[in-house]
Length: 79
Image (cartoon, rainbow, N blue to C red):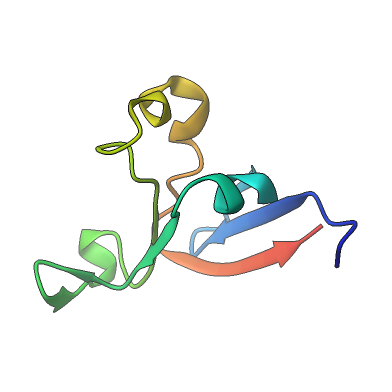
């Protein structure tokens, strides 16, 4: 939807965090399934973890982005 402005990230424990759609246009935000070549279990933040590339873009290390690193992701809704 061209009018959508936000992604609502929902974790297995029902934690929810909004993320602007523009984040994924501005940076290569990833849906991580594996860590060190192995699928991630719930115990290690799997099965899916939203990862922002702060190692390449230092501005992503600011506090406002921390809540967008949702682990144990179960759903994304577009709003």
